[in-house]
Length: 224
Image (tube, rainbow, N blue to C red; front, side, top):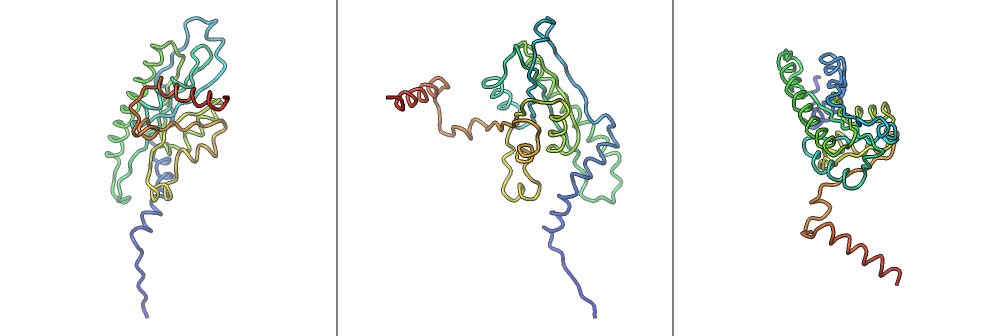
């Protein structure tokens, strides 16, 4: 007697998603032995000022979160006289769905394109930091984002890690896992998840000054 079993497509997708990070890291190491690339590094020209830096603020950005994470970090965290800001971006190589196809040329072309995009993104925000006289370093990495972010935070002995939220759906988050959740539980430092402005205040058309007045009025009411 012959038995025939049918495997639902979602099972294949689950297992493929499980092994995809391992494939990413394997291919990444073959293509780029350095793994990390320092794209930019700006320090204070004044050695006395540079010597007073005593805090490392790691900021993980991607194409979707870079702007609001950068703005939130500058508005709420960075102190130019004491902080070294380390900008990081992790690029992932998208592998073809058919693993038996010779994809050497595709991967090389894809890797170079992603490398350029990563470097341009980091250079743009590192330049903005330097124009504000903030010491910074920009590092491009390759691999699985959650693993690389935690590894780099550990390596540079970051005092805090700031990152954005990718807003994945429930199913995708269950299968692939949330990068921010992983970092919160595994990073060696405090982790801050900056939310997009529209998520914080979807119907708020007021300025920051008005919001601060509202907070002040509530504090006053508590004390009265």
